[in-house]
Length: 254
Figure (cartoon, rainbow, N blue to C red):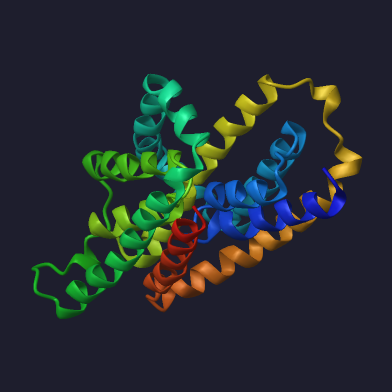
């Protein structure tokens, strides 16, 4: 893989990992365009870069993360069990790009529905208002975890599904955003550990890939800031038009 292909993959990973548009789906599109796949070493280092982006961005929320550790564990269970039980089926879906348009369409639907949840809150038809129901419970944690497991499939955004689920469970936009990326930490660590077990550590070209991981880390921070600003303005549903456009493009392309 050439240097510019690695750079484009790094930028794609950094930008789409955190924005609710599915990094796995975009990476599959880019890799299909290049007719190649990145090395496992690059995968591991880019994953590490985005993990450090989240850890740095939420560094002041470490206490809150620890306080919610039990809920984070519960939310992580559905994806673990589904991956273990349906491993072969998931690998098959990963190899079939024809499913990408449907997955992006699911992401579009989840994103657009966040607009309806916001409107219901603004009308304040519930007592107490949904916006005030910010306490996590084991059932809410498992529900959010079930939605997170949808993102096992390329094209379905993890952040979109978990933020939508958080809002559905009564979390505020800010709390849903934070909890979504609390869940990213163990998920990313699990992927990192799995990747390391599949390769020889001496093969990790740290020096060669350092520029790409640096770009990935910095762009990851920019993406997180953009997403937080979008969340605060309650305009997350705007991204649904983009993912719908991607889905339409893939349908026409196929």
